[in-house]
Image (tube, rainbow, N blue to C red; front, side, top):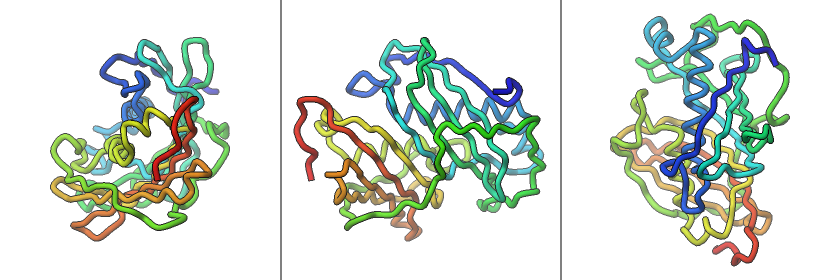
Length: 259
């Protein structure tokens, strides 16, 4: 890959980064993706502060799929590589690869971003910001498109969550990493001990703001095929906030998934 477009950063997995299995929390991984994407955009001249100052817009994640081949564990040092794709009509693709110290690929991810007008809280049209990259890469971390997500069966309410101060980011809305925590809280501790996530895909459809309440709903009708669907509905706006799909695998000597 061309060094002027590829950005790379190392992370050490500390005790504050892990879950009950002593593996890197998915929400922490999402935060790392956001961090390295911000650095990469800054290097290309389209960082957070300059976009806000010059155009009044900000990068907002719309879709992401993460395939976990191997989970980083506490004490590991990992490197995250990221690069942008050729811009679409309104979206901007960005891919990621996570490697261990031996260069082995542990995680692959693809994502789609948009620019949001911070005053109008709407997606900014292409051309508002003259984004051009010094090079383009056709290589993909996952050679697939991010398609629409929908439930395959009935949705059952798991729990409700009011968005608080600790959930929001500098854009004033629910941060994408917090969605991941909300999604995983739909399942019990024993289920997290017995199963690992092979793949997670999340589509963010509407922003959620402080003091609004999200209803978390799950569809486990395809659990025998190792597929789960989770959706978040905003009680205050009557809008769907996100849709997500998980592919899971059973760990050895573990019980069946609770229905």
